Length: 63
Image 1 (cartoon, rainbow, N blue to C red):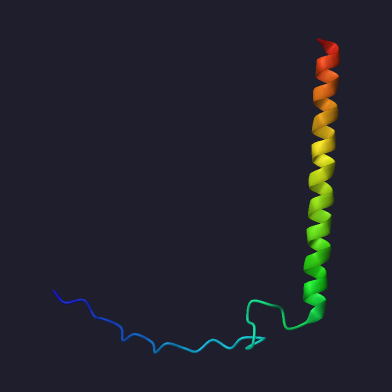
Image 2 (image 1 turned 90 degrees about the vertical axis):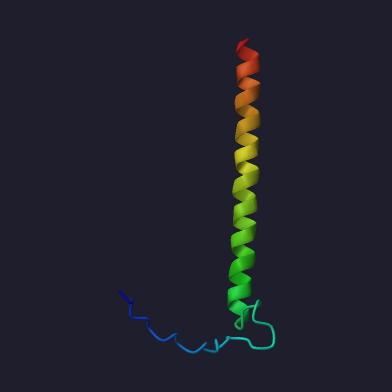
């Protein structure tokens, strides 16, 4: 019994938004948005750490 083999599609060339540096966004607004997201993530992370420190301080005060 022979399985029908599909012919492989030729390798397609990918078109990049920014062919000079494909890892960087072509639009500067995307870069600004990423920076805002990083600042927000850092702020939230710092806020969580502060809340954990307060919770551990409250537990120690109870004991």
